[in-house]
Length: 515
Image 1 (cartoon, rainbow, N blue to C red):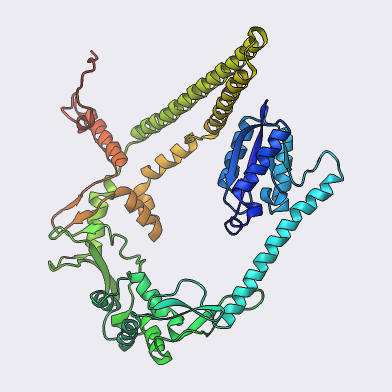
Image 2 (tube, rainbow, N blue to C red; image 1 turned 90 degrees about the vertical axis):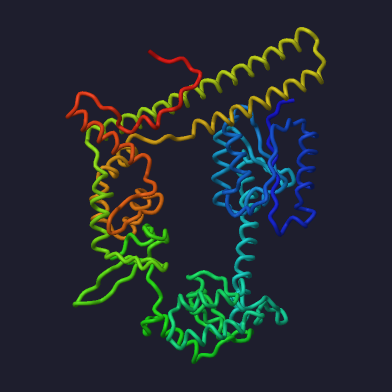
């Protein structure tokens, strides 16, 4: 019996309880069909994903296995065509691809002979019906959700201060024990006297444990007015309507809070995440107390002036102009490496990738040898069966074991061949970016500067009025600059006592020394 058949079972979450589509039922039907027709099962796959497309984990594994063993596999079987796909366009593409490999796909309960042209009409019917059913279900679901929200139902996870409840057939929510705290928060914020961050921290001590951004989003949420949002649907624009749930705050208080959030009250204006004047905010550590420095902008003498300052009690305060100047001098401008060092680094990285490619070629060679060795075992077993009178059940057991191993090896080989290494162009682009890092930082926008800072400074940068030092730097950039300094010293000296790289050498072990 040749192991030339793949069986595939699929269920989706809402179908698992249905006996007619259950995993075990499909598996039993397929195995019985293979036994009756004397088909050897090479592998079986059980899926738990929707059939809207072929982006399914088990189906991807099936395709890899079939592609690696396409000279052996003859057919892929499933119970019904809707187990295979609910998307006619993608299904036809997969059928054509498998046909080019010499492999048929078929449903054992709805069998078709696709070599007969008229049978393709039936195939289209089998494939289009599940897709139409899917579209109908999707349309009914969207219509139902739209109608429910129009009627005031709240769809989704209830916001802070509410708990899930149902009013008749509709999902909704009701205020819980946190509602009183929320009412108090809205009233305090509406006064516009205290800062938002100060209020958030104050209410953390009273049980409000949400983060900063969640706090601001909460204050903007109209659900606390007893409203629900009806999303844009077909040609209808999105809008808010009265919900079934009870309001936690009133319209007058809510509108005052929105005025505060829009910055009409100076004390309560929420901090801006992106501030072009303060790109180092979040990357600095106080040299006195070790706290992370924050930043702010002050107005005076007709302009804006940035400052980095400590959140603690040590009152550290550094002007942004001074901080940026010392950062450029002591950190950024020291990322200077000669062209010779960069050329050497590029050659080393390229050589490493070539070595990896060579290692990959060696692995492919080893896989091919294992595959050929398994083929030889199969041929020797067949010769012994023909000449020595080996028992049929022993022969079948050995052949099945060898064929299973052979298919696995071919699948692993296929995955290895598809693995990619870094190209020379990618390496050259990365090296060019390191080489031009000071210019990139100076000319880049805020987001680019943040990315460069994250690359340069894995940990905080400590800047004070007397020093600038980093707790830890990028090891690759550090090594390049060390080598550059060492090469410069070589131009001026005949010998160098130490260039700092010796600390990176491995400890002496039991290996023989090289002379």
